[in-house]
Image (cartoon, rainbow, N blue to C red; front, side, top):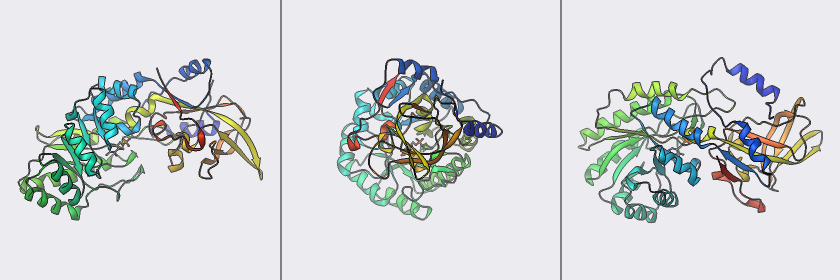
Length: 391
Ligand SMILES: *Cc1c(COP(=O)(O)O)cnc(C)c1O
């Protein structure tokens, strides 16, 4: 039976003071069941019923906000199908994602092209397939979209604070306050249908106030659009809803309280949507890999897993802290953890407290790993992609 390292257990206990809402994760009995059939490479075990639970919970918390799943978080077709059955719309960055969704029967009108930098060829393709809504955050992108599809419905991505997000995005995308007026004026001049506002608070955002600030800024932009003669009717509050790993998070209900209050005075004709990625799929899955070997180097204990940053466990290198479970019960010591490749960047952690008796062949279980794992994996150095197993 997988157990938590004692240090982690204490940490989780300490956090309960701040963080008492229940979250459902994949039951590890399913992992044990799956391992009875043998093991040949790392895999992600996905429980579809948890995905259904998460999207229902999201909708219940924010009844006016329609979720459009960010396909990049986990584009497995079975995951997408489950979300389609639950009535989700989608948000895409590329035409491969578009094709995948169209082939699964999603109407083009439910697919929002939310990548602020789109190639002309991709735009032409998306327009030919009937995609209606396109994001922009610059004058040049506005002109590009209008030159390809003069009747496109567009939404302006604005800059918003990323305070308290594990992946702050501010700076890369989002029209700055100083640039918004010019974009609105140009849309009016081009008689373009600039019809909405969006923002992205950054991924794994643990500060609900970021959504409030984003919505308030969006309302100001709406007002400016109206006075310029535009007809704003879409508010897209983006992604970023956090999932539990080792740090405390606000529940979706806590975030919803802030969002629902902020949108309460928006007129009925304003369509409100969100783009949850991580939130809908993370908790539904457990990543399973194995210790290839251990070594002592200059007094430091190292272990090497058969999946590292190229095998799907990449967010750990960007600062995300996963829970790591094992079957060992020895006392914890600090481990350096690396992946199986020969690349010097393929190191997952230093000083990770895990049982000292871990050894070759032991399984490693990473709960809540359904987002941004398998989607990132590559075959680098000849190692196989992790399997995705869906129950
Ligand atoms: C990645 C992305 C999302 C989803 O982000 P999560 O943090 O997974 O919720 C939503 N919107 C856009 C534009 C994105 O790029």
